[in-house]
Length: 291
Image (tube, rainbow, N blue to C red; front, side):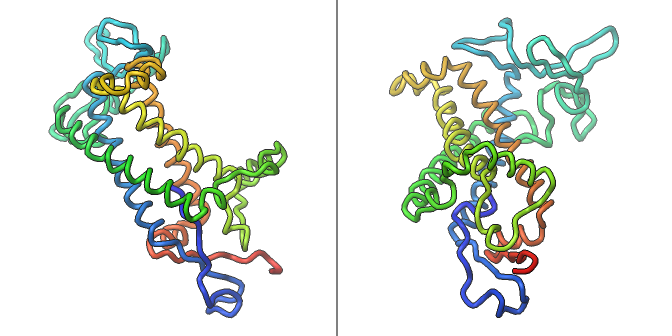
């Protein structure tokens, strides 16, 4: 969900002679805007339906097997101490109480529910493993096909080479540290520099395109018993079906983390300009002082 996954194209007839001296406009390609909107909708549906699927067995394990009486590395549940009942999240032996949000909460009718994730975060909002799987698998096809088409098109038009490829100079620790400090100080590039991805942006987008999304697809396949019939090696490489489920869950929340950081950068760098750029294709670049 980058600001410009396909790369910006300068709009003819803009710049110093435009209606706003000292500024220039660029246009996001139509294919970029369509992919961005489709990707956002697809990931939202898959996340919410995935949380409902997780509610059916809110525990994660490593290896091939895992059931109620096995020790999970991650768990969302509820417990009772005397007359008091509460929800909690447990990672290893560490436990954090999460009553009212995770594990123990009230639905809109005020009825106590003991599912891991609350009604407002799942699809459907009332417990239904069957419907959640239908939503999840349907949009998994959308995600897979859209990603494949996007990567092929990005190879054809040079977007990956031009905008995502990290050069040797950018890999130098000084370049990386400079970009980290500039982001920490909320110093965003202006002028022509705003048309190029920084090294942190490249790392983030490359991680999503070549690590998180492919792993989501691969682990999703590995969790399916049917995959054992035609690609048993995939499940074995991932360490077993339960390991695949754990990696799937971690990748999903890796994407959530990317989205939150992405939205924070949009808000901090000018939300009106950023949102307008992705909806209409027009993005206003502020010239540097003295340019």
